[in-house]
Length: 266
Image (cartoon, rainbow, N blue to C red; front, side, top):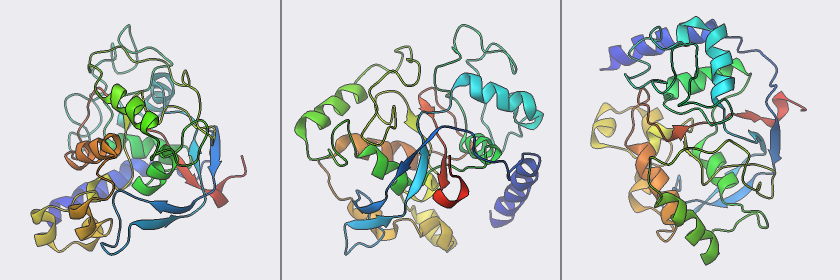
């Protein structure tokens, strides 16, 4: 298993090498001030808070049109060309073809059916990366009026209304909802989103047996005693992401990019 992981990691590095990882970020981003976050997944079982450094987050999820431009430029990530160890059979299958969107994928809808590997490659091609779970959680705690709206019953009801919606509802275009106080759109109410450290949200017995500290560094035992159990909407995201493998794709899972603050002045 460890040899397979090394080989897949080497191949992924080679594919990403073909992408300009030194590109200056061109995606519109918002500055998030960072600070102390009461997280549902603490890194230390004895504490319920973590410190999130200041960072930039894309204002909107990546769209079909943006991801299409990426695969047109990087043939290795096109449907039918991307290695099977990095994408499953559902990879952008709602597109008409590898280089055409078609009626099932409007240009301004968020791109979905994209694996973690493909999402990470896209972000690195923009000189960015996927946000960490704590960064995403920090941004998603805000609504239009408050930096942390999680204790607001009306906010929770609104989110649960979205999570109870049928999954076959046609996706809206990005940016149609009001932004939160940081100027970030669609963290709730549109699609689920990949995070950089998704594989460490829950630690399985298999991971612990492998003794790989990188797989357990995110939350360790803290994930087994989740805080803030009333925040069902966020906990549902944890449940989804922790059940996935990096090659998996789903029709309601998209992504956005983030970047360390010092990498851009945009």
